[in-house]
Image (cartoon, rainbow, N blue to C red; front, top):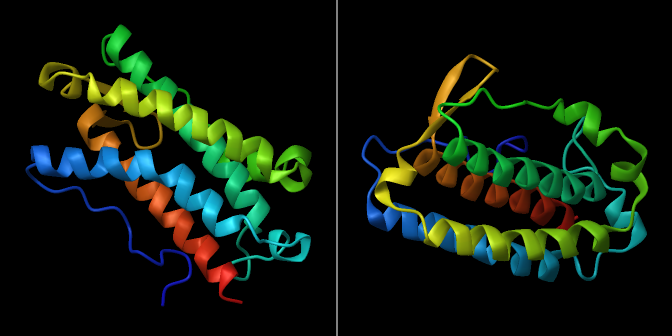
Amino acid sequence: MDLKYPIGEFECPEVITPDHIYKWISDIEELPEKLSNLVSDFTEAKLETCYREGGWTARQVIHHIHDSHHNGYIRFKWALTENKPLIKAYNQQSWAELFDTKSAPICLSLNVISALHAKWVYFLKGLSAQDLAKTFIHPEGNVNISLVEDIGIYAWHGDHHLAHLKIIADF
């Protein structure tokens, strides 16, 4: 098993169908409960366990999901209110090294992830095909990303880190 990418890297289908969109939004909707159920019995020792050498601890992964998905939600808003905005990237590794990411109780991020995903899913379900076609520019590589593709990216991202936490759970 590839510990860095236990479910593989995200591969966007050439043609994104309504079934893809429905599945991805369902994945985003279900992540908070899956995440909370998985880590509910994690001890402090488990929370300080890395899923691979050089990887983040369970605590860092949980707080990273919050940070990433919070940024993701804002990117959707920018894309719908600005014309192909250049979004602000953030240094994920540096954020993962901040004191709160390394020490804060996980309930702080779990609670926000639950609320954020509920609002995000409500928002996503209301987007039209025209909305989903809107794009933003990611500065890392100057890549143009459509909102419909980004739904898939964030669905994958949640499952990707859920797989990391499952590795830790199985230790």
